[in-house]
Structure formats: C-alpha cells, structure tokens
Image 1 (cartoon, rainbow, N blue to C red):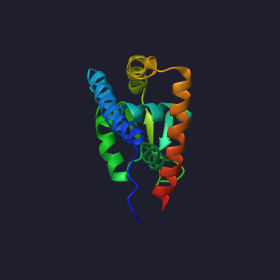
Image 2: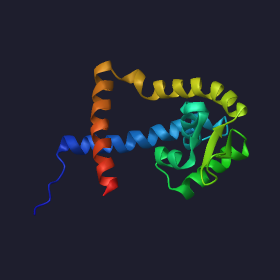
Image 3: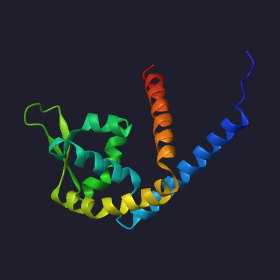
Length: 153
C-alpha cells in the first residue's frame, strides 16, 4: 500500500495545530505561574469545583484529566500540599476516595479563574470569528470522538 502523504493544506493545518497548541500551553502556564499553579493544576481545580458538591471520585477525575491513577497521584501532590483540594474517603465504601474542593481552593479559584479566562480570550478567541469558533469546535469534536474509539481498542 502506497503512503498517502498529507496534502499541503493538511500539512499546514497539522503544523499550525502543533505550534499553536504548544505555544498556547506555554502562555497559559506562564500566566498561571504567578499563582504558583500550572495548567494541569488549574484544570484539576476547575473539574473538582464543577463537580456536584465540589467533590469527584478520584478514578473519575483521573479519567476526565486523561491520567493514570499514579499520574493523578503525582498531579494532586501540589494542590493537596497547598490545601486547595482535600483527599476524602467515602463514608459508604472505604475503597472509594474523592477529591474535595477546600474553601481555600474555592477562594483561590475565584481569583484565578477570571484571569485565566482573560488569557484564553487573549490568546485564542479574540482572534476568531463566531464561524471560526464553531468550525474549530465541530472539527475537534469529530477528532475527539475518533480518539475515544482509538483509545478504547
């Protein structure tokens, strides 16, 4: 079977995706650094804060963050040490543990989230039309669906 090389337009899109995504994460991490957090910490805090009762099972959090259980343990070290999140055992099932947002974590998120939103708007959405945002969302959703099936194989 002959190799099907990327078209020039596909190659431009692929290379732009790589460069832009790497650069955007560098800027997000730089802007979060003044709060002694990185993008992974912020994503974890956001997911816990958006969960019912600001609490989520650790196995579900690992899945949402696309981490292994040991990866989640390492990811949580900093936010646990800073007391932004607490690790709580289930009272119904001792095998189940949760990440629970702390009052300190919510206070921090109330300060950091608006700044993070401004960063996201500044580096991405302020440069796109509504149609471009819709196209990106649609395209990346299709890619995400395919990736789910690839990863479950």
